Length: 349
Image (cartoon, rainbow, N blue to C red):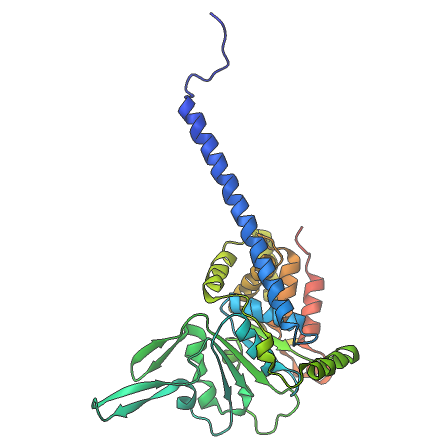
């Protein structure tokens, strides 16, 4: 009898199933790669769209997009007149989102932000009238101008994406994002945000003046616009459905255990660093992981690298860690301490 190499337990239909599974896996991989390219292109298109108007704020725009995709909120610190409000408006239009703006003042009440129940005489019942917080993207100008009572009204809505009034719960429509600004120079008549509220912001973005070349470009853009509304120059790049899928796929990005350990070690070091009075919380660790995944997908990758982690560190940590009084008097910054910590920890390979 001739010897045959055929496995007696193997059937033709088994081979067919194996080939089918292999084909499906290949197709799935191609789809994943295609999706990554699509997301990367979306991000590039959005940046290009906003650069029609905004000059020299590429990092700011990217951080806004990352915050949106990770369900985060942003605290923006910068002097007046550097296009914080304009950038927020244009960003909202580019993602086809509703936009509202609240100017925080010392006499502002929580009901002015959240809304209030109003008696309807015809129906003989109270009706809830929503406040300006009920929008997709909410810009809060000078958040530290309002007293603690009004600031605390944001705790629930920022964390839970809901508002509870008179025992009734009102959910926010997705996407929901708060952008709050504060002036780092003028502190008279302001109320510093408590650490618990600062921790609600995924990023603190520090903006500075443009350089000379950028300033010339800004002047030229205003000259060329002929007093036209800048909003009319911006097209919608990403719709709400795309944002939802984008967010879901970010959670599928791979992150190796050694990268997670790297994040944990950095955050742990903030809690015992001699230059710091207060270290970062576990919420910071999770924020670094999520934003690192977002940076990965924006760069067309399905895995996180140490560089993605490094890109996330300063905007995530600089409002969550507190310098010791001695180091603050010496002019040291939280960013300086983050750099020290990163240099002291071995980068995973």
